[in-house]
Image (tube, rainbow, N blue to C red; front, side):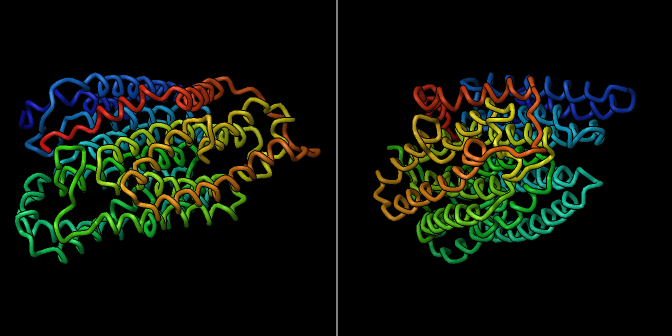
Length: 492
């Protein structure tokens, strides 16, 4: 189907729910005295939006809003992931001491608005829509990262994020303008057909794509567009750090895949894809993947601030995800989508344990984890160990299965160098993850270290994340099946 603006509204229930909630919470903020109620409303709305997005799976598919966005299985997959990321962020925010009395009405409006933009990033099939959605997410993210207005570190994070984001967006727009000049269209389908027919414009197209990668790569914290991530992750409120590490990265991955695969690559019909003739973007992305995982892991080795350590870890995991992106096959994309799910579980879980430590001790460095298992935090310490070992790719956790699928897709295409670099980086990563485990279990607390107090709401969600990380490490078939079914692009 190919629907106009009015007809498309019937297929935009998740987005409409978020848009209405943004306006409603803004109005309620003027009258409601108990501001925590606004967070509960935001949590309820994001649950409804996520369920509405999931309900679209298996139903009608097609173009909406005059081919600006697509409704297909791929969009549904990422809307569900993004909805879950927003849910986790709001849940964490309700129990965060950092955000107490920090204008909750405005805060939850910005989180929901950013989620709305991410939904459109996942479904954009037009360069104009992709740019508008990305910029909408970026603008709200700048504000959220600097939301602790009395905190100098938070303000610095927002300023750096704004500067890097502005430069990346400018480069991306210039690349888009080059593609528009070559093809006369911003629609992915028309653009891909025109570029395939042109043939002799390889160098210009390659330059345009490289410039666009500045915008896409900045969103997923891909080297060399990652410089903002450590400072922003460290300075932002912890729930927003988690939101950027999980939600923003997933939205960037969706944008990247939809442009490069059904946009400017040709599907061969046998589960494989062919890149544009004369435009060797897969080789460029192989180099980016290796550089991203290597720099992220090496930089994380020296970090004592756990937020900053997890920031560099997030950079490295973007490199792992790109392993599935570069193989030009549905198997690679399935591995990438599966890894996105398990990354959500283990990374968000790690940030939630860090939130508990921060709430209790006011610290976010390794010293705050010292002797955690022996000062009332046995369960959070055990959960953190599971998340970290899963991030490192150790069995029997979901992270191992995720990396297994990524490496299997790379080896199947005989990309030996990429596989070796990925394997070496997994070994390096184990060292800095083990440092946190060592601090929790092998270092004794000293006088003055605070005793962990109970935190039932966050403990419940951590328990859910632990369960998913363990269960999907031994029984992963349903998630893989969901990922396989989601490699369906409308119009390819």
